[in-house]
Image 1: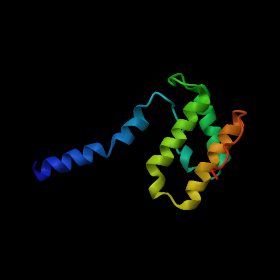
Image 2 (image 1 turned 120 degrees about the vertical axis):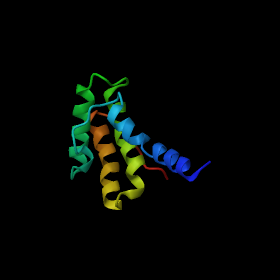
Image 3 (image 1 turned 45 degrees about the vertical axis):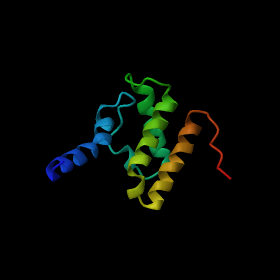
Amino acid sequence: MTATRQKRRRSGTRKWSARVTRTSDSLDLQGGVFKKASAHAIAVSLKRSAERSRRRKSPPLRSAMSMLTFYINRAGKNLPARRLRTLKNAKDELRKLFGKPPKKEAA
């Protein structure tokens, strides 16, 4: 395989997450939702998007949690620890907003 072909294949496989974010049927997200300062603000925005979306295929909590987890998994290695902590706290806030108990920490 030539170097050009390898390079093309590699760059094509790196952008699948951007395509999923743009075309996913789970939610229509508010711009900059993951850049909000507080975990509560992120959770409120995700909840609103999940409840309003007509494209989602699962319950609102699951759709919102899925998009948050997707973002954390795709951006996680490049996020500062403080930002990652805020995003993980947004998961608990999201559970609270939907009336579910927070997830217990692993021992």
